[in-house]
Amino acid sequence: MNQNNHLVIMAGGIGSRFWPMSSEERPKQFLDILGCGRTLIQLTLERFAPIVPMENVWVVTGEQYATLTREQLPDVPQENILLEPCRRNTAPCICYVSWKIKKRNPQANIVVTPADHLVTDTDGFRQAIEEAMEFTAETDAIVTLGIKPSRPETGYGYIKADLAYSSSRKKNIYRVDAFKEKPDAATAAQYVSEPNYLWNAGIFVWSVSTIINAFRVYQAKMSNGFEKLLKTLDTPQETDAINKLYATCDNISVDYAIMERAEEVFVRPADVGWSDLGTWGSLQAQSQRDEHGNALIGNNIAVYDTTNCIVHTTENRRVVVQGLDGYIVAEKDGILMICRLSEEQRIKLFH
Image (cartoon, rainbow, N blue to C red; front, side):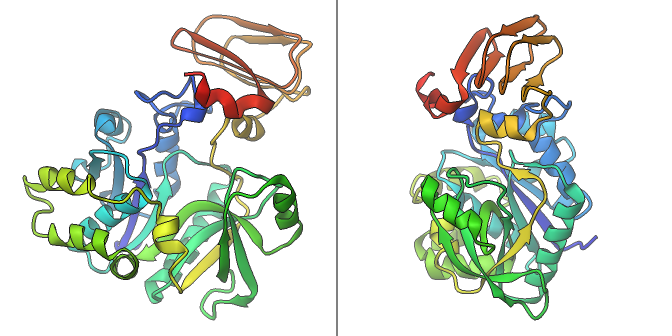
């Protein structure tokens, strides 16, 4: 295991599309959504355990989730859990942790991942990440993971890869032609019909020097703010200084801030059973289903004359469903939600 390898887990989201199971008090990354006995953030850490030393694992999350993070990831050093005073999207979070890592190890090589994704082929995933990290350790490149699409998904951004141009160092790594916004259904169908379009998984690999230089070039104001705090980092004054700085940072994703502007950007295609688990429908698609297409997550569920549903109850009470087709049935903390899968985009309006 390379001692220069670092992992950054971004865990500040609130998972509003997974209500009522996910709430602002306990968002989905801290829940056992799959019913497997481990939360999504715990599964995320497990995926990277063979690649990154535990002392090099970093978690960036909101102040309100500090206790949850420490409880669920007790092996992560407490000083590596960075608390955001307010939500400012992914660019400030990555800039902050990158300066922290650079101060500790200027030779660091970093993989950045969301906390709440699912990967079923963990061996294939690790191989892809290891190849990407070997590449970024030798170059000034930025690498993103591109997922081979299995359907014309309108909920993901896409990466257009130049499959004719592979790296001379790594045959499975290709130059990125363009990043594409979430498409409409017709455009998504077109993308899926072409071999060079991949889902953007939001997983990034770069050396600490590469990402710091990218922030200096493309987000100079943000970079200067954190660089000025360099002497304050790892001191008792850090929290107050970061709290003041964060409020002045632009609310911007690293995709807009860096990825779409940088020149040396590559993609490593992967087919690893990935899902961002952003919706109930995506959870149903990734779950084991019965012969009628039902995904049942809970210990005491019975269904009759029911098809293509997802029933999720972590309470101990018995749940019986009859006569539904294409519905979400979810219970959490005294709230019962029954909603058409086709209307799940409206869930944000229900709470």
